[in-house]
Length: 505
Image 1 (cartoon, rainbow, N blue to C red):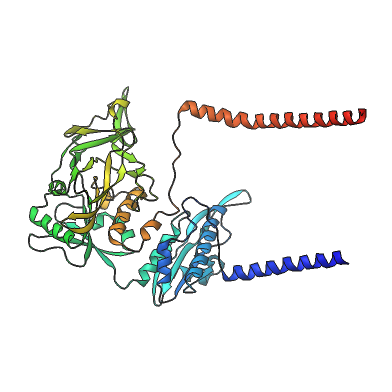
Image 2 (image 1 turned 120 degrees about the vertical axis):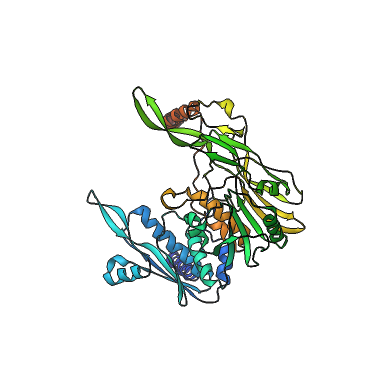
């Protein structure tokens, strides 16, 4: 009888604990995140945005159901993210999931809201077919709304959601000035970057004169790929801007390449002299790197001429980045015809190398003549870790603290215009936009842009090491099985000997 009472008491306690856990789970959302980059943990920036919300935010997620597992994971991850937003906003963020595929009216509503379907491949009865899939959301605050038309699987979901909520709650946007008048890149030539910047900033082109200074509403001035001289009077206006706390982004090279003439020579815009006054030197050298991109060049094979991809060390493919908010999460950028950066200025200024060349790199003094048929050897790359981009913070000009980012490559984030436009490596754009965020934004959203999307390329190993690992992977399981069999045989043998000894005794 006592035994039965104990059993019933135990069952009652277990049931009570389960009910309590369910009640607490319904009220409090808790998730443990063991990922290296904490991709499932809300950032401080998101917590700050959610805690400062004055009006409720509604997220309508238009996501299809019955999708392939790799795409369905996007829906699951987005839903779990919204659960955390709702839990951490004290009810200010509410959400609903709608499947547009189930009803024609709902599908029309999704299209009207700006969420359009994409076609995905689905396997059904051993056959591949295409299916319309919705993977977007509408973020609304009052009468205003922002659209996430397509949530790319593996994309930075937290950045997309937090930046749109921040955009809706902003009363005044920060203004970024894009300097013009000296052959600089226009806003229309930077489609990818402008698309990201427009979420948080007003970006406008700005022309300086010898008399008019930089307007007071500009927080950051961007000087991108100037080709003509910026005179001293105009650069003094930039100094005045920095003395009142303004920040500067510069993407410029001291070298200009002319591919039709197969040569590169020095480029003087006045910026190099102005930067030298601040202790920052753009060397008149071209950086070459064994880790590089390729160009197409004609090759003669007998009587035939064909176009062939040839490694071109003047286009470094860069993987070495500082542990800095600007470069966090960035894995690969391409620079074309870049030059070294050196600093020997005010020790009170914090100088941080952001991007470096590989451990097999070198430099060439300009003018340089390109030889596409050159056979490159290890001796051509005696240097390592050449600084190609840097951040400065402190009293750069006068005694006022300001920030500056300098990238020794003018067009790394420029798409070009009309038929000359091209799609850029995403991390090239992220490097530029992250720099503007670091210079202009105090919300901390910079850390979210590449969260969850960073790729981690495999470390390259020698051929001998590859062979050793291959044989190890093949032989090690076999050796384990043999070892297990031997140990088991010895244990059984010892048991038989023990029983025989006991019987004999």
